[in-house]
Image 1 (spheres, rainbow, N blue to C red):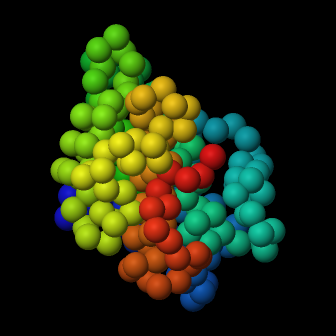
Image 2: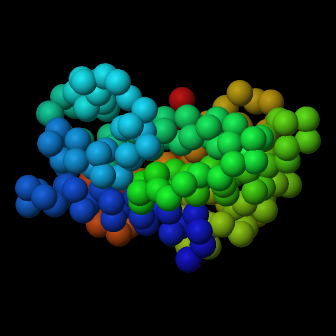
Length: 208
């Protein structure tokens, strides 16, 4: 299992750990979400001054308005925080600093950033993946046959077309992160057989 696949599995494990607290196991209540954020995202929580933070996150993510978050509703939180973390990581890197010890979800988000930056050419500080770099990511970081069927390194033109939403010929971090989270949804369904729609065909990168 590659580092990227390990991080996707960690997302599932973390989600279920808190979703199981009320013996439901399928969704996060507001209480469970608050505990998850406090324990697994302490860096994020510490930076916030809003007493209504959890209420606002629940409202933003709860698409079907049932006062609970399933895995697919939870994933956009990871997307948003990953993009924020990428900017913070770049600032720390510029100053020659390293992140201190982190909780598990903090670490997962940081790992996703590190994987992207490892492959992305920083010439001119563009921080984007060209076709060759994207092909290398898919070949080296996606090993599971179940995930390979959703995005194919052998057809890099097709893969680039799915991911490159702004059609600039490269994949930026936002586009990469959405793909990772789409793959995480597919991996979640494979592992649990529940929690949302099954992935059909090459679904990765189809969200706007």
